Length: 378
Image (tube, rainbow, N blue to C red; front, top):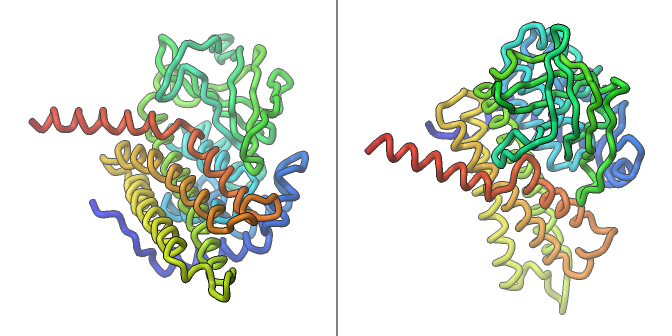
């Protein structure tokens, strides 16, 4: 299957609308203001994204209050939020939480939460216990059946936008298998402690559950397959977000190279700067291609989704980090100052490398999948 790199006219129109909206509502000055504010985002802008553009519900079926589009349209919105360094919980809610609910096939859970997530009335996130993921490790987190429901106890670190979430989808793996439980984030038994993060534009918190009641999404212990599909779509979206940021860094670098003069010449006329910009362009184009394949597989539920998603997550954040660093270098001394926005992208890129698993873990996963494929073919 060949990834479609050329967007349709409708997709271009969507991109233009989202970009124009974010240029008005999330300019650099607003990003700087919100990243040090108490909430970390503007609730009015969040409501406008839902009510005027329908962004939170792009991939949600109409029967659940969404726009009824697909992953390709959602990916466009995610890319633009990455380009604008939007500080709100769009990725956590519209991608992570929404993807898990959609993949679960649980009609009751979808009917309860998707209309609220799509309409912006509720914010969602996903909390991954240490027992879940690529580097599964023993966890003191516990999930106990009680009175027809489940009770959660323990702590989960590094949950994105946890403090703002009304619904938290907790994933935990034990002898019964992988389970996903929906928890009301406003429950008094849930305590969120904000964590210091190198990227101030994305909030993380440590969550402590103390006898917290929740509702199982799907079946208890039966979430492995659909959870994996949802996470593959989520890491594909994260790769797309990185592409948006990397593209903005490239544009910043090229613009500055044209306008900054030394010894009567634009610095972009010097060979060293030309080479660095060319390397940045190659990295951005390669990341775009990798992300496009992951988006294609996600949108069409392709068989190659696990490989495409792993490749995109392994490459795109690291390419973003290199491009963001080169952008600082091209800006010279200015690039190292607080006033220059280059450092904001650099920090987002570094945090994205580790968010939802490092590139090394996904390269290991990709190599295992390729080995299994070759062994099956031989």
